[in-house]
Length: 258
Image (spheres, helix red, strand yellow):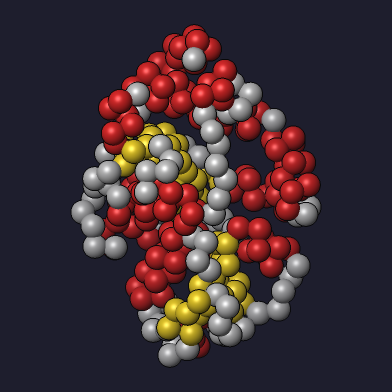
């Protein structure tokens, strides 16, 4: 984004999913990638950018339950949960109650527990190192439970920002779509940079990136609607902002002018 002319008008902030959720809710960010749970909870204040997400169609690799015993033997015990991701924690709650049918206490990540919810680099590193114990991939568990895709993250815009700056949002929407396409076209470079930052090896990252889905298509929407229903919300709760993909090319000149 910072290499685009639009980048001159945009300040990029980096943070954990829960931090970005909070900043968007507080109005300190106008547009952000956020946890899908946060988008559901703030549906009246935020608009979802259509065709954009962070999801999976089964195994994801970066969201796991790491346990020293089979999940069926966790009944009545505790699980340490990271505070970095809102969606992963809620997904774990759903799977424990409805898929694995065990009752546990969810405790803070600094507490000793026989099982831990891990996300991101920590989850990938745990699997890469062959750590002893049982590893349950939550994306795969959701697929086994529902047969559906799962959406961990969405791009959202504060509703008043969409209304006040429609031209800028159209340009930013195009830029995000272009960024996705460029990333897929130059995956080797993305992997090399990610390896430098995280210390994870190239094959691990290549496998991980191949599992991720960035297009909020009909399969992703169906999985998201089922997740919303299981959380007690109505289907089709989210309002979207989108431009038909065949019209995105027409935004290039607009983006260049900003």
